Length: 439
Ligand SMILES: NC(=O)c1ccc[n+]([C@@H]2O[C@H](COP(=O)([O-])OP(=O)(O)OC[C@H]3O[C@@H](n4cnc5c(N)ncnc54)[C@H](OP(=O)(O)O)[C@@H]3O)[C@@H](O)[C@H]2O)c1
Picture (tube, rainbow, N blue to C red):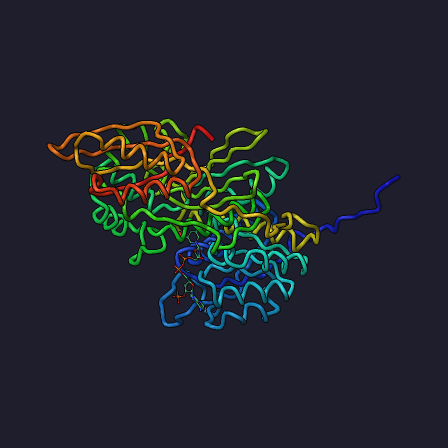
């Protein structure tokens, strides 16, 4: 029997009106490319994309690359303007970005966004609105900037059982960590250099606290496992407490330190978290330096995959946004689905305390007989066993570098709490989780 299904042919000469909310780092690059490279895009894709409206906050700013007459400070006019068929949101933040995205979808307009904060906070609601309206909501640039990772996860790997995703998804912190390790500079100096080079914002809190990476971890977990991890179920730690002594210890132990977004499938549910991690020096992510981002995927059939490249910057990010615009325009014109609908469920999210972790602990102790046995007892009581101990003497004081075996996070924390209460322990100078080869 012949199928009766017919796909509508689209008229390649038909022009698609694009409305863009935001003309900053990403939006500015996007508008310039859509205007200056319009014929190149048409030659490559057969689509004629025309920028019809650009919404900004401040009308008084000079924007020489944006044709006059397109600029407005009324962002909701993108939704109501019949000349705008497709909306790009590159303004950032939850509101009014969230209202523009939702209203555009509800008006039947395809939406492209680079806004990880919005997708992490309201992904399920927005995916449902897109499915209800039958239009695409695409967000390739929301994780990894110019690195293709959303499409690989949702399309190429749709038939794969992904077990684990590890991501260096914040260029600022990776730049700071690799500068501290390679150049021996302190945290403040590395941060100032990152700000000077434009990798870090004047207020770097969202980056160095792990909050930016946490939004990306939630998105990666949702797409890899179909389980949405609400922001309040996601454990996030930043890099501000890591010191030069930790980098020296890591080197002695054969590790490098990276801030990682971790998303993993476990028998009892999904875990998503962000924290510094000591990686073996030969791990594929150990080679990722400076502001580069990378996402490493372990799948049960495909094995290991590594996606790496520029995680930010106007031009690379605009490339990802433009790719989405082209896909959304194709879908809009053809009337047939190009991008798969994103399906996510609340699902089981594992408490961080139950996740198995392995720890590096740097301790300053009084160097006297019986110290090691007290420390070993603290671990033993918590049910954590010690993998290795290195001691560096400092007269009547010593520094111990301990690495534990894998144990539930809550047990590791209990052991460290006991250590802090011991008279022989002067300070627990640092704790960093270690990429486990035991799990
Ligand atoms: N920058 C990157 O490398 C990068 C990488 C990946 C993803 N992203 C994401 O892309 C989005 C945009 O980032 P960006 O770096 O391009 O931001 P940005 O440089 O701060 O630009 C934001 C733009 O949005 C406009 N805007 C802000 N609030 C507005 C409002 N209420 N109404 C109308 N316009 C408003 C601003 O107008 P004015 O120009 O008048 O201030 C500006 O043009 C964010 O979601 C970000 O997370 C950025």
